[in-house]
Structure formats: structure tokens, C-alpha cells
Length: 262
Image 1 (cartoon, helix red, strand yellow):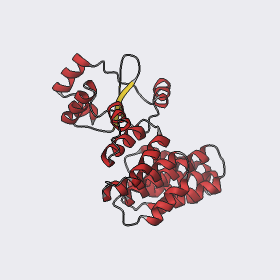
Image 2: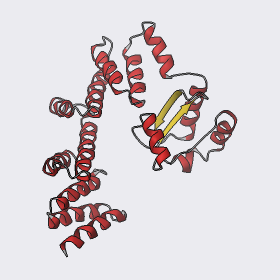
Image 3: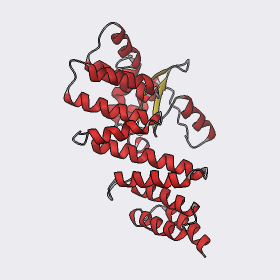
């Protein structure tokens, strides 16, 4: 959507040509993967603003409409709402809940997860935190601890925060974490029964309308296939195909499983 709407906007094109040097890099290339890793990227698309010395000024992930993207550019050019300005205010003694949350989010976006976790824990102790601040900090800590493979913290969060407005989002984050972990184990042919247990746990967390469901089903099918349970693998991948008829990959997976059976 950035390509279709934001980057084709005349105002954005004009500002970018006058004040920026825009570069688009395919994250699927070797160079792109290395650069994404260098800047601790966590999602696609990643839009990152750096100065001529390579110092990061700001970043965001996903889609922004043209008017919001223009605000983001203006803020970067004028050093507004940046990690640097937030950190300066924090060091001067501004430890308000609002500033702590903003600073924690900046560190989280940059992949500096331990620093972000520390600040979110501070937010939980803040005297002027709101109910939403409290719920968000608990969710953020549990999600970020998954980056450190501290899975038990997310499991504990889900047990204790069923009424939280972030509960469903947390379940989705945990399910996708379990999916990535199980898939990696399948790729390495390592601890396949444990991988199957992980993906089953992930599937329990999401419902049939969740967009991630086909991905998780594919992972389970792959694990079953590697466990030589080919008929079960076909049965599971058929569910993914029914949910996503347009993705050819799932049919290719089915053909792979069928070739073994036949």
C-alpha cells in the first residue's frame, strides 16, 4: 500500500526529492537481509530514516497514508518526537507515564528489547499511569520477552490478563511466535515431537477467522510429513487450502506430501 498510495503521492514525491535521498531495498536479497539484521528489523515493510553518517533518526513499520507520512518526515527533519528528544527529556527528570511509554516504544522499534522492557516495567510503577498504560505495559513486556525466548512470561500473562483489551492481540503474537519456533525446528529436523506440541498450542490460541491460521496449519502439516505421518499432513494442508485458495504454495505442499504417499 505504501507503493500504491503513499509513494505515488505528489506531495510526498516532492518532499522526498528535495529533502531526502529515498532508497528502496528488497529485504529478500542477501544485501537486504544483512541490512535488515544490522538495524534489528522486526517487521516488513520497515521505513528507516538515517543521516549521512548512517545514524538512525527514526523508523516505523507498515503502512502510513500520505498525510501521516508527511508528518513523519517533518518530525524527522525537525528532530521532533525522536528517540533523542525523548531521551533528553527523560534524563532531565521527565518520568511521566506518557514519556516513558513513548521512549519504550522507540527502543522496542529499534530492536533494543531489554531497554524497552526496563522502561515498560518502570511505566507499571508510574504514579500517573492510566488503565490503558498499565494494560499496554504488561502486554508489551510479555511480547518483548518472547524476543528473548522467555515463553513462560507470555503464558503467565495470558493466564492473568483475560479481561485485558490486549488479550486477543497477545494470543495472536504468541501463536505466531510458536509457529516460527516450530517451523524452525522442522527445518532443522530437530525435536519434531516438541515442534508438533508447540504448533498445536499455537493453533489452540487462534480461531478459524484468524488470517494466520493457514500459516500455522502449513507448519503442522510440514511437521507431520517429517514424522512420516503423510496422510495426516495432507488432511491438515487441505484445511489451509480451503482457507486460502489463492496461495499456490499450499497446493505445492500438498503435492509434496502426495508424492510421498504415492
